[in-house]
Image 1 (cartoon, rainbow, N blue to C red):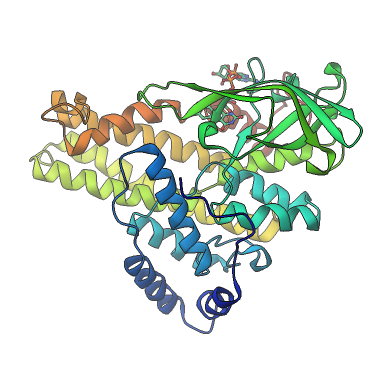
Image 2 (image 1 turned 180 degrees about the vertical axis):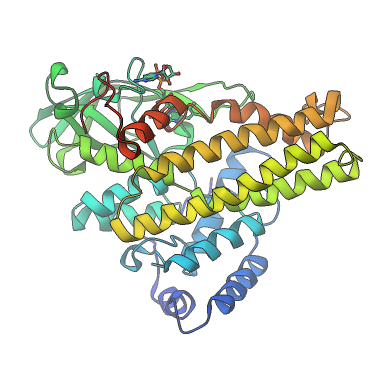
Amino acid sequence: MTMTPEGSDRSAETTSETTTETVAGPDSDEEFRTRLRDFLVTRHPGRPPKKPDERLAWTRAWLATLFDHGYAGPSWPREFGGMDLPFGRQVIYQEELARARVPGPLGTGLGIAAPTIIRYGTQEQKERWLAPMLRGDKIWVQGYSEPGAGSDLPSLRTTARRQGDDYVVNGQKVWTSHATSADIIFTLVRTGTQQSRQRGISYLIVDAHGSGVEVRPLRDLTGGYLFAEVFFDDVRVPVADRIGAENEGWPLARTSLGHERAAGAMNQAALYRRVLTELEQLARERGLLGDAVVRDRFADLEIRVRVMRYNAQRVISDILAKGEPGPTSSVSRLLITEFEQEIHELAVDLLGPAGLLLKTEPGSVQGGRWLHGFLRTRASTIGAGTREIQLNTLAEQVLGLPYDPAMPPR
Ligand SMILES: Cc1cc2nc3c(=O)[nH]c(=O)nc-3n(C[C@H](O)[C@H](O)[C@H](O)COP(=O)(O)OP(=O)(O)OC[C@H]3O[C@@H](n4cnc5c(N)ncnc54)[C@H](O)[C@@H]3O)c2cc1C
């Protein structure tokens, strides 16, 4: 695995290149688009390697290339290696990356932990953690859910007991995406009594390679190992690696959950714009667009992919205006997850028996991508808060309906 040492972030020579390439002006939006597109063509990393370790190293190398040339973190402050782009250019950025088919971020830190650190971290923590995360030198993963604490996160039981300048952490997390390649796990732990619920939770950053951390992969429906169980057995974590005050991690968790739901909204809207066009093309080649019912299903998805784009714009403008995505992020999450399930359902329906062949089987269509997507997206309406929890959020925070008595007060 090619690892770039932490701290080898921008060198003096790359900083000067960055300055001319990422400043919002003086070029026009269209010039910015052309410049970014040229960069993505020139530096494109090519096709991904098949072996997981090589693929990981390949993705890390790409993230480092983006960072070193000032094309990482479109919404991040420049101080921490981001581009600090205005709204319109963030949209262009996501459209161009989706168009170029380049690898996305590693782990889940960028969309979830980073906004939390930017808002609540100390200056020292920001300097220590943000740039290596953005550059892909350190992969961050989210350890919130536990057996018995998913939708009801305030009931979490992993404990962190203070001993001198450390916490000693014990407990178990589950469904931790990308945990097998993690360097850092951002966790919620109980520092108060079990009865304290959301008033006794702290936000702790744990070294995934530390003594007492064990990661056990979990197989998913696609046959892959997206997520894992993580066990903490007397893991020592410096108090300096807590974000925010002790027992006051819940507002941080809420910030990060909002960003988790918003994360990649524009990127996914742009991605699914391309995927829908590719499915239309496949249906055309197979002579399926003569069927009025098929055309009707495409028309429905066409409308929804455009609504996703507008909603993603709403999410970005909310973050820019208020610093938080707010409940719009739940709308966005619902739109994307339901869309991605339905587009793959349509694809598998259209392809008939051939649509049920995996990439390893002769006769599979486009390497089995549609079946893989169909299986993968069954979980979309569970991760980052289930569909029911998103609907509750909208009912309560947008429509003003009574609060769910089972959930903590806002
Ligand atoms: C693909 C995927 C990736 C994930 N990645 C991560 C990760 O990286 N890190 C992490 O910490 N977690 C992760 N998760 C876990 C995810 O956040 C939880 O699965 C989710 O919050 C649901 O929790 P649960 O599984 O405990 O289900 P439960 O909370 O037990 O829910 C069971 C059912 O009850 C319903 N329900 C529960 N409470 C209510 C309520 N108050 N009102 C109405 N209905 C309710 C739910 O909607 C659901 O249908 C991931 C999950 C998936 C599927």
